[in-house]
Image: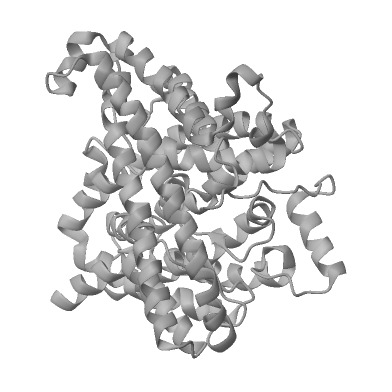
Length: 479
């Protein structure tokens, strides 16, 4: 049990996991010792900086969520991955750790054997998906070795399949850099990109908004984010009422508190972007060693903030649009017999912000707004549907907040309730899908070393004949 818990902690701590892989990659390249030490430590520190920024951001979002709930008079279920997994680990800790450890082995095996050589490095999301698999399979009456192996095959396959499905759009965002998105909100990102392509113009990017000279400070992404969030915080402070906000502010004037939290939010975004730049500077060269020596063409699949620097203005736009969709959807949940899903600020920021970047890549400003709005609808309705498959956990006042947890949990629940044979069949289907996607769609491969004709055919199949080439916005550089 102690070993399993230690393994779970290592695999669910992105900084340690990615640092170890950077170490392996640098050793495989036979880099000098100073470069190995420096590259490994900078990779770990970069992830810790990113995590620190996320902590700052979440701390600022928490009072905003309470203001929205009180200001709009909402009561219901708040989707929070960490909360629902915390409940799950109380009863399913060992099974979750077993699925998680085996899933990493499956991921590495599939990356080595298939054409989709993605190494999924967002460890906490693997923990979340493993907990989901353990809960849903147990609720369907499946246990023992079957639970561990079925869960590991499904989770390990998803660690390859989801980065592959997003890759055609990630390539547009990053202008072909050797990184992928490893985050289980991929259904929302792909939907946003497709909506953006259908309704928008990629040439009209969020990053190219023209402003009058008197408002030139809006060209600074940090300042524009701060101003936008100041308006949001002050609005909901007024709606919730000064007396309610005073209870959150620990005696500080409610409007002063709102200003501080808004600026803290902007600071958190800035820290995240700094961490992302550090990671990109170290992990991509390190993965050259893994690619050359261990897993041919290996590409790291990283957490969603990895795309934020490529369209930083699209991030707050996506967040606000996704949150608006969550509010708009509320009146429709009750008549459909679904639990009332309160918009959770954390999933709407990270997943909604990511959806804004994806929508912007294919549809510019309109794509960022409408694509993220579509994502907001997805992460409102699907978590409500998922509650039925979470067994006793479904009675708790929370559920999973990101789109892939919801659709995977619903699909797995439907199939597993038919019997263990059907659950095994689904697991084998997921594994087979990793090979089929890599073979049939070259555009989903991490590095397009296939002949140009094949690549063009694959892109047409995935993105449609009307797809146009987009020049992604250059990421901000550190000085």
